[in-house]
Image (cartoon, rainbow, N blue to C red; front, side, top):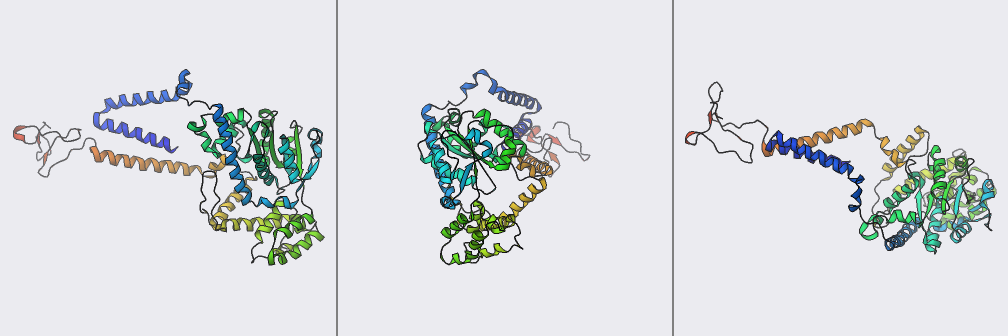
Length: 488
């Protein structure tokens, strides 16, 4: 958008200079030439010989190099993310899964296990990539499973050398073809793949077309309700016979699936932790004197697993948040036992999310490095971060949704702001341009006068013309009545 404004400003400047220097006749010629140029550029892509201007497509060697580089970069990226999310301890949570009985007829075949722990579902998929759908309640560990599965696939030697790439479904604009969206996201997340001199002009598109990608699609439920079914239809249509991983909340997946069946898909559901597994995780992850603060909580989890805190802490996400929030010496996890303050599991989760969010902004460590990006200082202080998140949460509440697509962010700005910005930019640009032009050439039609009342003729050139008349005097004399002599 800014480039368009700049081009328009330069065009206006060119027209103004020609008008001041040469007059309106040549301005007409210049405008005609510019209009012709715009027309040519507008229709150039449809000309039969446009291939002469296009970069050369990627060679097989360049596609192979792109796949290898993508695998290395994704491995570095998700290794850092695993550390940031503390997913090294995910296996110690003893998260279990089972095949969803509603889809067991089409998903259980060929010796596939019907239940197991987190490691077993990852190992089974690594050995036999397929269509895998992972469902579960909020906070059951679906995203963590995606990260761990991506890393395991990157470490393995995959059949057909498919590279796993994790995509967030919330960034999909349903008006865009699903395959095109995958390619665009790949270019945006790994922009160096679009470097023609290294990987050619079509490496990302070729990776998808040659089935060299294994999409791991996290968060179907983050799409608006009416778009989830369209996403499933796109997967059925665009990825027929191809392996992928899809995660979604259980109820949302059932509603989006309806009477449709994802052919050859294994649908598994992540189960809540039992009280003993949650207590064991806390005992293993909390060390030193801090363990004494957890005694009452651990007792409540094991003795009363259906209590408010017991129900809340059997969710892997909530259990992780509790361990992270109360690891500081000045915090006391026994406050979670107060059922007057926290009458429902959701109240416990809300308390932990608020505390964890503030602690994350208050963390003085630099942001972790990414592919081609060094570590950098945190950009948000806790107050600013919480204020921004509160604004977005209130907006979603008012809209009665929990989804906010990236393409909807511009709707948050009132229309009058866009109009005001354009008016200000146009006014400032016009003022600067006018000052520059009038400073160089003067205002059209102006004539400088001397203090004695004698007037010089001024022609539109870079310097004034030589005076004409007798004896080198000025070409005209101002009379008392203000009338010139007529020879100016």
